[in-house]
Amino acid sequence: MHFARVLRQAGVPAGPGAVFDALEAVQLGVIRSRADFYWALHCIFVKRHEHKVLFDQAFHVFWRKPKMLEQMMQMLFQQIRVEVAPEKKQAGLRRLAEAMFRADDAQSQRERPQEELELESDLTFSRDEVLRRRDFEQMTGEEERRAKAAIARMRIKPLEVKTRRFAPARRGSVIDMRRTLKAALRNRGELVELVRRKRQTREPPLVVLLDISGSMSSYSRMLLHFLHALSNDRSRVSVFVFGTRLTNITREIAQRDIDEAMEKVAAAVEDWSGGTRIGQCLHEFNYKWGRRVLGQGAHVLLMSDGLDRDDAGELTREMQRLRLAARHIVWLNPLLRYDGFEPRASGIRAIMPFVDEFRPVHNLDSLEKLAAALSGAGDVQHDPRYWLPRSTPA
Image 1 (cartoon, rainbow, N blue to C red):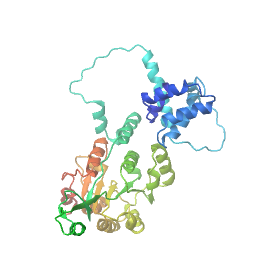
Image 2: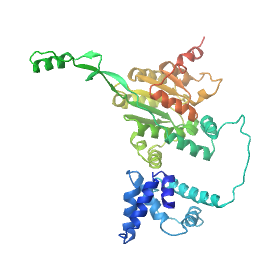
Image 3: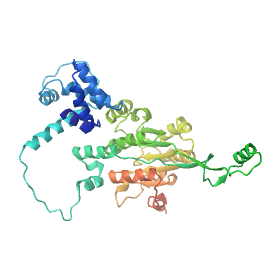
Image 4: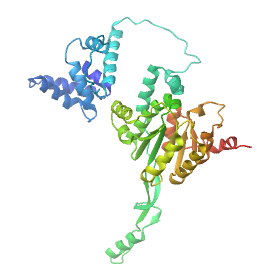
């Protein structure tokens, strides 16, 4: 039962039914070796391919020796430095270690006598509500962990847009004359029911351009977790990151396991927390990737603070070209969290006329509103025309 609890806290769904099945399998008397025991539990607890890595690590560490937690603590606090060949860390090991330590701490806390504590709850906010409004830049390590878990639980409904094609429908708004005539010929001219059709719907492609420069470092880490959840919930999502160069991380971030995805993204990107060259990176995107990913009415998410180091004229030309290829452009700017924000920077003034929505992205609340907007629940509160008069010189 303790092993199932560790698996559950590490992200493997191990419910009471699986625990009863595992106990029954062990008591059948057919397990002769450690390999039999491993495969018996593997067949019961592992239901998806991405859970196999976590189960392997948990099994080989948990069932090794009785005092497993003390040995893991000694391994973490290394005292002797030995030059060895670098070994690749497996995805999910950190999450598994945290789950084991939390399980051990919870057991020790249950053994201690609990002290009663009374607090006044008037005019206070719940911990979840405070976390939803906390700025990513001001979060502690524990709050970041809880925020990443909340982002992983987000579910984004697909956005369906109408196309020019039609599909058969029992109660469609348009009469399908061809199918109706064919049905009449089959019935030799007798009266037949009119065959109807309606517009087909499909999910438009989504292209994300994420700024990973130094000014966006506090937000890019949390946004990458949001994009991982977005890539797993929606199809046809393309993700690009840019600082001083443009990098396509669509395949890396599409991994099912979040730790493995972040590891692959970190290995693929070489310009973390550097400068910002938005105009040059957009130029590379438009001429190298635009015709590949911006077809069929694609929507674009631009996540950047707009602080560009290059000439604003090039940025204006590339944003105009992007505007012609994309159907809908949403600009997510963490600077919009300030009440006194004014678009005075030249990069911001160059981007503003070519976007359809201008939204803040600095906490969990803004990400939840963005998820609702991606599902089609848009509003007029984020119209960039509200800011355009301010950005236009007198």
